[in-house]
Length: 371
Image 1 (cartoon, rainbow, N blue to C red):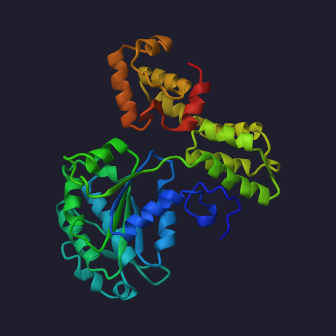
Image 2: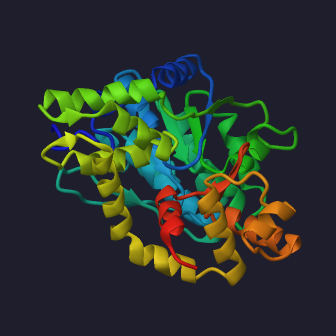
């Protein structure tokens, strides 16, 4: 169904509403077609999920794609429940769904079949921690038995490093390396954890995948993409206003989409920088209570650090005497500890250029917020 607003901010609505990524699309498809697993790395909101779903939409006739998000998964048992249910639902045949063939693969933990309106049941796994590893093995045995070629994307894969059980990444590697009919895409936003897993000799997945990083979309390509919708609808499109928006959010996909989604509602379209400013103000106002509560939940030192980095945009010398004095920050050791904690909780983003506030709208709000 054609969306009323072409600037999609949730889900995937087809290639007509997907901007560019031709190079990354070609790399990912080529890797799948040539039997290479892939690790896809980028901060959140850069469009990793959209790219994966775009690729899956194009290769679906030749492969059996499956997307699994484990961002909210907290331990091995929960992972096995989510993963096993997604795999059995995606890769079972109609005959298996209506019969008992699927139960032959899961002897330690029998899945529950939940009837659906379409006549084909969904699967649910209720397992105890002691059954997790055995059920995981049975899930991979099930994948290996498939005549189709599964392509399995596990998003926020670095989460397995946070599980209380040690060595879950090594456990998964031990199964994946003996699953030759399946292709895997490991996607994630915490790049330092992914690099420990995939790009260091100590990591269990070292040299086992093709590493891909996702940059922002080229400004000219994004401008042409956005302009085409406004002009087809007979609305104004100010290229300079778009360029200002692009620079303001460093070309990060979700923020551009979110602002353009609001601008689209305006009768005159993107007719000026004011249209951008008012749309950004609207988004910030809608989250203001959340931002207040988020800031209030931080320590006094963390609040001062967040405000300082927001005002700088990107701070490359967080621990320098110049910055400590400029923003009246605590001692260097206190700042180091607070910055490490804020980064671990995804309130700050560390890049080659320095530190920035991870949520750009939160950062915009912090710039305006009084001490």
